[in-house]
Image (cartoon, rainbow, N blue to C red; front, side, top):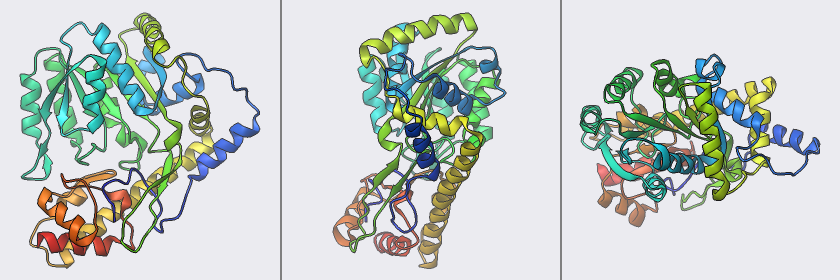
Length: 390
């Protein structure tokens, strides 16, 4: 079993499964006999407009006032890199970006290569296997005035631990008090809770509080199903089915005014041109069809909720199986966490035993991908964890 390396979501029988909305949207795109000319530097306009609406909300004042500068990107990684490059060039204060401990492994490399200095703030409490909220707030208060702060908008990767809505409000207050600049990374909108609006709470709350910030979006998770075939050794391997390989994303900046937005649009184009010139069009056209067609969008919302609900169900099943085995440990953190990844609390030594004695493979820090768990293997996984933890 390989619950550590599975990058996404699949069905409960390990069968290849492409989201029906992706199939339908791609069929519409291919049958439309569209040209293969370059998109503009900032991408497919119908896609970027829809991506902004998805994140900021249909009634967003920022969108109505035309003060959101947005460009299509090469998935979420590309969006982060554009943001890093932009801030390294134009941010008027310190060139430090504060990221949580831990964070997605690539954050460090992306921002360093962009010319920013990466600094860490506390996030994960290994003793409670939960959020170190007090430590996070203290570090944000102690950061130099005007620091750039990276925030995972939902489904924190790799811990699966998110602030509550009340905690987000306190984070917003501290960031405003310290004049920090938020940089949201939103790779799992809809895929975390199954609710598009709920997963965008942090972004929309910060917007309502008057923050100016930038946002990286990825459509690699919420428009993809991934199969995890079941093998006798219970080693799971994932195969993307959907937009995972199409690299669809967006980077946006919430500006002070429409005039500032025009200036930032121009600078983004200057920045993107020597990086990759123009983004790919096929995946963006598929995403655009889904986001702009009311029928497809409604169906996609149901499919995303179905994916999220399966993850939530597998979390509950793993916890129940461990508790039914009589484990002496508490496992509420498995169901308290959200999204694709879970921090089990297992030590590096225990993870080594899982691999060597039971052929269960995951990262040494105890992280597993809940997407790799199915109703067929959850009991076996629980038994293996129980044998190494007691």
